[in-house]
Length: 221
Image (tube, rainbow, N blue to C red):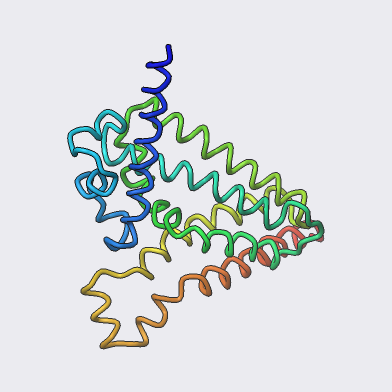
């Protein structure tokens, strides 16, 4: 029993080492799209063939990071807005923008989850991701519903917009070497592309105001 427990603890610790290695390597390599298992296992101090004991594939490992990212975002929103009330649309948008901007790996992963990660793992692993990400999403909506003057439906729309914009803007604002060189030659393109947090905040604020205004116009009509 003791040996089995220690084995489970070792497995959990090595799994965490692999996740930490992938998280550290992502910015060093230029983003999630450049991560492979070989440098991850090397950084974690494991033999490259041993990684299969913990994750069946690179996609499964990265999906685990994305799932944890949802939990971190939920916690960040709760910490930012959990004890506040009466937040207007602009303030609600600012909470979402600032908390997303504080989670760069999550923003990067948001692009890759629907493109490859959740579709390239086993169905039970995909089910677990969906279950936990939807639960975190619903908790974020519930937290903001209690803190904001916006309705739950408006918050859901704002949340969907936040996810889409964060995924797109993050990739654009972290260009490949070719595009980085191009932006040096054409600074006006680079200025627009590289302003991740300001663009996200501005457009989420405009969306939040629009959603609240549309509802008010509908009620008045």
